[in-house]
Length: 135
Image (tube, rainbow, N blue to C red):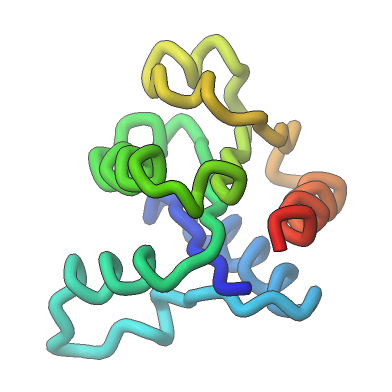
């Protein structure tokens, strides 16, 4: 299973932690830090990675709620049947109501909540289980 992780650049440390944990769990995770090379067309390479992905994890933080790229990636997932069960929104440091106000389409998916940045193991475990259920 190929997994795409959508996140705000301000949350790169969290994304790296989740990415590494998913790789350690045996999942094939697209890694923008290593899979985009100098001179690559970022939008094109990211779009190709989304097309090849079987599932998408979206790390929704206060910063991510303001990101047009996150909205664009979620809109893409909304229109693609393979993501019907393979889109996993993860709320980090925000509640459901705030997420719904900023990204109304989130009501279509079950979410995972990570209570804070210091206790990530439980949330990462839930993400891994959700991805395995999609496979």
